[in-house]
Length: 226
Image 1 (cartoon, rainbow, N blue to C red):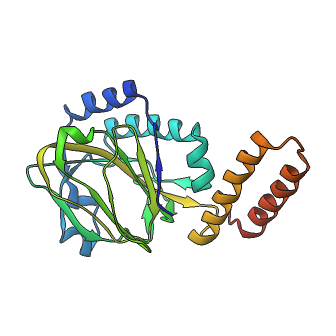
Image 2: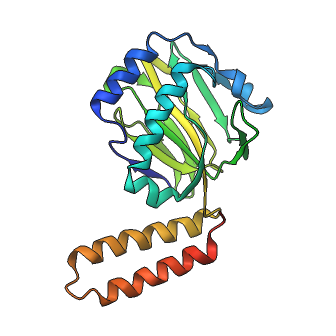
């Protein structure tokens, strides 16, 4: 499932991120890439333990905790603290697949990367190129969202970032371990939850709502891995 999630951050929060990140000391992005990915990665990142990355990452995680669309779609059990990258002057990241297991820097914890997320921090009009290209069952999807919006997609997806030929592209990126490992099951639960919410708003008789809600929770109970 490939899902845009609008307005994860407010305009004020986006402005704060950009102001801080434009003053930050950036490092070679290959430091956090695996052996194969490092061959095609050409960008810059904040170090994982950088105080700025931690502070802005906490702000993003708090926003996600309040976002019902994210919670419904991801059903998260663990989230890797957000990282931040910067592309400009032709920088790019070629085709790659994210590693299946991601350590959390400075801790003994590891996260299974069921879902990948990119939160855009620069408006599309401010840079050329930089599209996130994601391969899915319906072909290649080109993603370039407004600042504050996020794309959520399966961690198994082949993807790349096109070269940025004008301006600067800033983004946060991270991974989520879901209670539901299987993407197909996760999508069915998301569709069912969406239908329940719509039915609850329109159905005069709440009996059917309760019946469908019961099905949702029984499936979640059967499939969830916590």
